Image: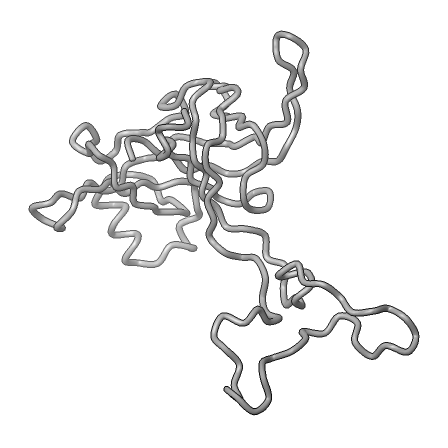
Length: 212
């Protein structure tokens, strides 16, 4: 990837284009990301930059991280993230990545953690069918058959079962940046993005170049 930034999902709203069309957008607050470390191929074995996002009180930071931030000469940050960019030579420790690294109309990918929905059955988790809801039926929202009884006498791997749903890292690709408000560090992205409000998301340039 060529560029990326961390931000906080604020919520969804709508704006109107010049021709009067309503556009649903997600608002992301992307305050300046501060470079805390620059990793090189000679020292760490790969090229990357480590950025910090979001202020945090000193008493909530452990001693190893305090030393890391003090060595870089930057304020304590709540979140640390590595970006493996194609060209990391243009960044130095203490430099900032702001929303103006992107432009309006650009296609981006957004990475976040989906909303956790707890323990769910197969109907909600895998969109399975339910049984008859009539009075005599004893099969309504159960899992169903686990496999043959005599042969092979086991449940196959990857059988769609009940379990914890959501709370996973996911990526939504080819989203369009509708508007950038630089003075407020806001990025308005068309459509929805993963995660609940106030969650941290990563915005990067689109990897499917053919769809731009």
